[in-house]
Length: 169
Image (cartoon, rainbow, N blue to C red; front, side, top):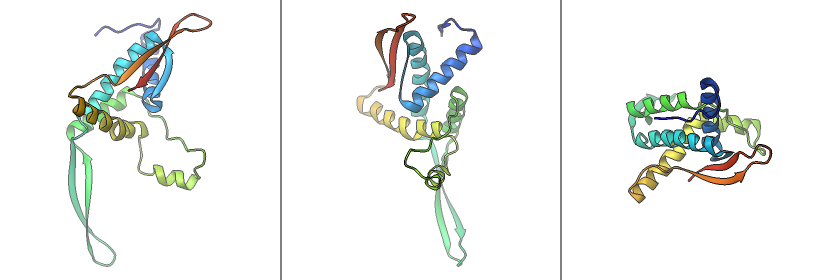
């Protein structure tokens, strides 16, 4: 597919788009130029579609162990299937991995407890929040795609570049 050059060399353009896609998926809304918004929208739609297509590919296993008192404990472990794991790795190559941010009223102990099992917070957000939300929306509307919205704001003061808000629908 044809891609806009955005007046940047290839490495800078790829880094710019990657960072803006990461910001969009992390914050659900960004303000940028209209040309950049259209490119970021294409990439973000592809990432979300990849997650939606593989959201149900999980493996459930029952692992049993013996505790200190000799009781047998069965634990159900849910892991990614082959397609979901491949999609996860592909998405990890397309976005940066921002760290989880501590909330304003959260203690350090509570923050550590909340994030102890989260290794890649953005990837978890994509699969656990967006993929489930949009898979349900696709099922209800009997359609797919259209996960982002671009709203024109007008000319930016200073260089008169066309600005736009890009948000997840």
